[in-house]
Image 1: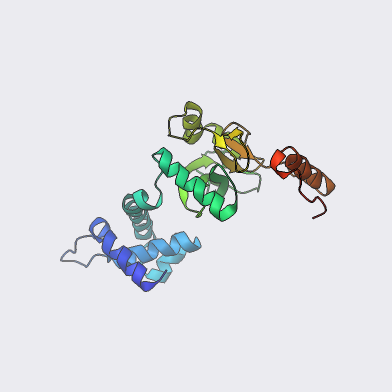
Image 2: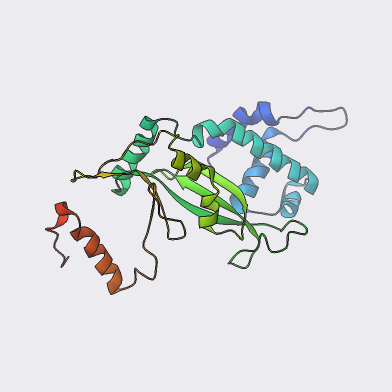
Length: 245
């Protein structure tokens, strides 16, 4: 982060995180509060380590991170984590995917990320994941510019990506068709309507608005080539493809 960007962010956050000085001591400045929080978010450095680096008590560090994160969400969410609220907004994302990634009718790409934690007391194996660590899961959907447009975070790490998606609010809205998703439209070079989709890996479930990749078992060596050729030959506009290439 550049110094100019940091100073600009401090100025915007100051009304939300500035604390009052007392006759006993001065409050921790907004700039230092932001620096502590960004260091923790960017590196994952523990609060104990940060307390030595910034010469602040560990409980103080904990409070600063929580308060500053709330302020960051309040300040930046509408600009940097804005969910598309109209058919036009979705079509902008679709256009970007086609222009940048050559992928038509795409609303977003999603995947999950395990975030390591110390498990809550008496939680048993609820947070124990397949990587043999304890975690919560962040499920994110990003646009063509790799910007988050939807986030579901907090599910215990034992749950699979498919299980998280099945309980996800976005899935239910897609099923109800109440978030202004554009109606199906033809793919480039064809006259057949195709629904707009979110793409994910084989850990998710295939549905009308979710397109998943072939499983790894199906996409090894010669089988992968056969699947790709079969898909291409099913489309009239690419029958003349040079399979040798």
